[in-house]
Amino acid sequence: MESIWMKDYVNKNIPSIKEDLETPILIIGGGIAGLMCAYNLMKNNIKFILIDGRKIAKGVSSKTTAQISVAHDKIYDDIKSKHNEEKAVSYLKSQMEGFEIINKIIKNENINCDYKEESTIMCASEKKTKKTLNEQFKMIRKHNNNVKLLSSSNTGFTYEKLYHLIDKKILSNNKYSKFQLKSKILDNFISLGYSVDMIHEIFDELFSEDSNIIQKEYDKLYNNLKRKYSGDELFIKIKQKLYQKGYQMPEIIEIINENLE
Image (cartoon, rainbow, N blue to C red):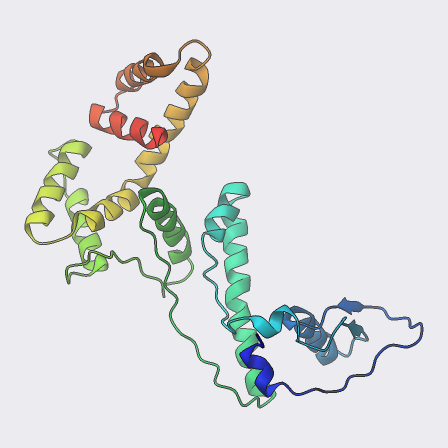
């Protein structure tokens, strides 16, 4: 089936190469990536040759959705996990700069097109993917304020409003332990009509530092104790060690269950 973009395709009749040539820069492929390289080299008066096995922009670039997006699934979380947050943020910034470059080209070249910017929505339904999306959201929000995290079970109250209400209660707490406080907050806001999922999403964000600490403790104990114990006995030993370190039992059970999933 022919791509919809081919209906308006203009053949520029670019000549074929029929002899040996020398060039300081050779661009292989005349799709969007190759053409962008060629455009920037041309604008900087740098000599180059671009070659393609077919006609210009008739390969993969002719069959795309023509959508340019910075929301590439969970790639920022993947980069952070494999490298560090600095590299993930650097990649994010490069993607944002891409929008600026495209807008600049359209304006400078007086290109008549229906390009416009729209919001991008990323969804997660399972607990594991929700956690990944939440971590990615927190990282991106540090560098881009035009990002929001919403719950599918939103009952009309905004995420931001609930976030600030819960944060305020945590900061003013001087009476309850963390787990008593979470239980009190949960009961309180459920009775006011807020969704359980949204409350837990905010808990994950506000208590993320504590979760990271106990996760590291869990990983250390697991790696040390698995040499001697296995099965239920291993997790009983981990539970005992974490409790001795001062962690509350609900917190210990939660981290063990998360690692068993």
